[in-house]
Amino acid sequence: MKKLLTSIAFVATAATSANAELLDLEKDELTFGFIKLTDMAPLAVAYEQGYFLDEGLFVTLEAQANWKVLLDGVIDGQLDGAHMLAGQPLAATIGFGTEAHIITPFSMDLNGNGITVSNEVWDLMRPHIPSMDDGRPQHPISAEALVPVVEQFKSEGKPFNMGMVFPVSTHNYELRYWLAAGGLEPGYYSPENVTGQIGADVFLSVTPPPQMPATLEAGTIYGYCVGEPWNQQAVFKGIGVPVITDYQLWKNNPEKVFGITAEFAEKYPNTTLAVTKALIRAAIWLDENDNANRPEAVEILSRPEYVGADYDVIANSMTGFFEFEKGDKRDIPDFNVFFRYNATYPFYSDAIWYLTQMRRWGQIPEAKDDQWYHDVAKKVYRPDIYLEAARLVVDDGNANEADFPWDSDGYKAATPAADIIDGIPYDGREPNAYLESLPIGLKGSQIVVGNEVQG
Image (cartoon, rainbow, N blue to C red):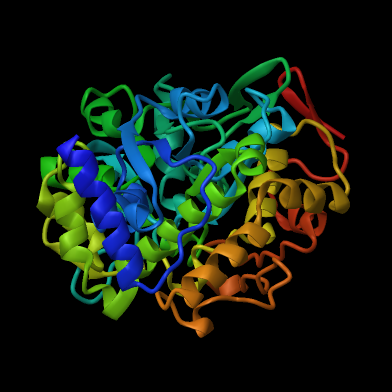
């Protein structure tokens, strides 16, 4: 009771000090799920900095075993919302895997992932990678350097296995993108075969993020794509070498989202706004003053109830640089972005990129017209809720008017060729034209039948 009274007093004090009027909440006790990754930071910060309490919300944060358990928890109501893979609300809404209408009013971050290979594979790749004047490898590293390694494994009768975290994860699509940009086939899905390994040169399978380094060390996989801190963990353990970050793969690409059911948003509209307000404030705190709060954020995330990795491992990416090999630290100030560049705004064009990748690899088995992509994006991504919450944050005096894209139609300007590793621009307004521009992957009316692409 004492703890509860203290919390209530804190809410009243915080709300008064911010000159904010609390929304009339339909539900104030909430449980949110997350996976142990650094990009769950907005949830941890909203909790630890008291932003949830400022909104009158009593929140419990619970780590989940894997992405499927997390999604199921949101769908069945055990969780009120969660840190989600951006592909999860989209896949659930269109019925790929578990079917449910999930929405997102808040994008949690940009960038934040990397691709790591084992020491053995790195040694085989290194002769095929140009060097800079100081002898270090030149970045970004193309998967073209992996082609002779995969061919060697194939000649020895060994499948080349790599890990990603979930079939509809950014990591799956980023790893596939990198491989295909280097000329390697990452495999296809079909309604009859959901392994994603049809016609593959490189065989991708699911491994939960915290288990990636151990699975690599055991030799079960030869590389993986995952979020932090699990790439840097491989460097610290001396078992692998990150070859590329997703910032180098596609500058300022969208990553996780905060997901809730459409039913939750309809039943508890003010609660949804209050949660979104708290998350916006957390994102601002994470990026403000040139990331000045990141060391404190790293300390929070290093606690066992959140990510639970060593402070130094998490700091390696969260504080503006990234270590590829021991001693080879390179400045990547935007490796993790939580608020800059409108990172928290749920752009339709981000949703459409995920949908194009689902179609590209056969998770969407048949062709869809452009309007279908736009309609699904607008069903799942909810900038209307986001901007309503943002307006309240500004009115409370906790953000600047200029911080938000009030006049956006939900589509980013096309990503230029120079910002993507294969030099192919992306325009979310024209999904089918984008698919046609990609040399590897399904396009037009093509379908996967048995073990081959037809059409």
